[in-house]
Image 1 (cartoon, rainbow, N blue to C red):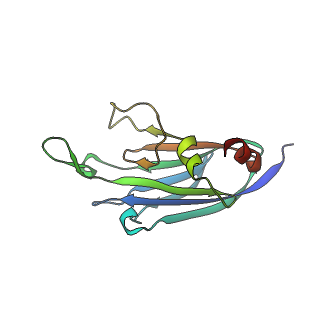
Image 2: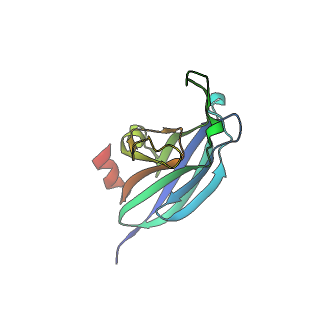
Image 3: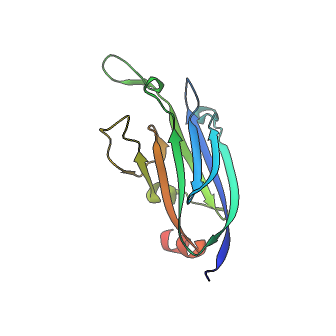
Length: 153
């Protein structure tokens, strides 16, 4: 039988929007943790905090942040194709067991854009914490977390 460890998470998300706030789902492995809109604006220095803790078995786990329901009218462009205004979701920070991931968030996360609306996008984008497309940001981590931190800090 594998050992379990209680792991605490704190996720800070904020946004930029003009029509409807970004719709976001947060998953840990296959479990839906939160289904919400991010009304907190980056320009106002505000963030939505999603906090939870859970017992996890030793091994690899996946934290997923899914950006949903962005539509073409959510990006305003001029006649030359320059973006005038946009809807964006920013992963402002993540803490695991009270340790701020900082640069690890940027280094270890991979974004998988939904290519149904934008088939021109690559299948995955590394080093991205501000999301401008529907899709799924994924970060794998290991339990016990202290070993994962030592290997990745």
